[in-house]
Length: 314
Ligand code: MN
Ligand code: MN
Image (cartoon, rainbow, N blue to C red; front, side):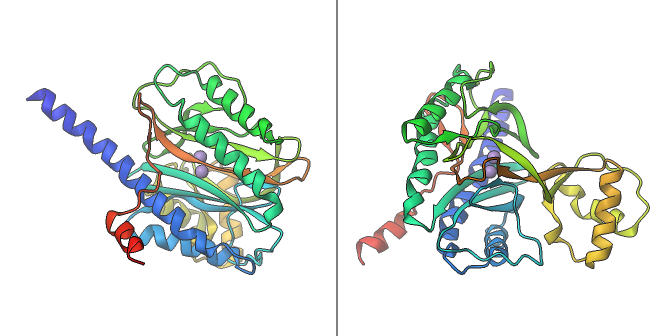
């Protein structure tokens, strides 16, 4: 009896990872039609987050829409004026959570055909890395195959960006999953990890750019301003999952003062926008994987059987 009860609990946990992953995969595929020259980043972000909510889930982090040499952590603010251009390569990084269980997945689209090889390089690296997501694999072996795959296509991996473990309400848990052959940790059965190779035609190193659009609540503390208190209240149930100011409805001045106070008091952790140091193009591909003899890619898109039937009859 006891054993049975125990296995039901484990089953329920996995089920939420699978559900979050499935929604993330659907949103990823449905969002691709939004990516076209002339599209406004703010509209894309709002549409993607609405898709997540409409499927009964919540964002594990604000959708990241990082263009060209920006590798990660760009999410439009309310006054964003960026429109996609025909020469752009965009990384769309989507996070879904259900009750704290996360699906994290990303894709790149090059609107310029000449940069499609760069997109392919990170996709192939991800594909090869997933095959190694078995118990007892060293994380350095994953980094090795990612680096080799990207280099074999004539590009460089970004050395100071990594994938990561996923735990309930914890987006960046141990172990780090490197994009180069480093690290001593060993994968364990049923561990949930996000693998995210980044490829570039530049040096392969990212730097903080100074702009901050994404935060995490790390240490709630007494604060003076009403806005700061409101922000803490609004994001408290996210625990340590990241958020963005775009989700709030304060006046710009109140918001700026509130965030300033929260940062000064050490309440927030910042995720600064990351830029490729040499200013070159960056691509990213990401999936969430449950480690096992047969690795389970929770964010893999599974077409519904009736959809396939419909297509056959077209
Ligand atoms: Mn991601
Ligand atoms: Mn990730």
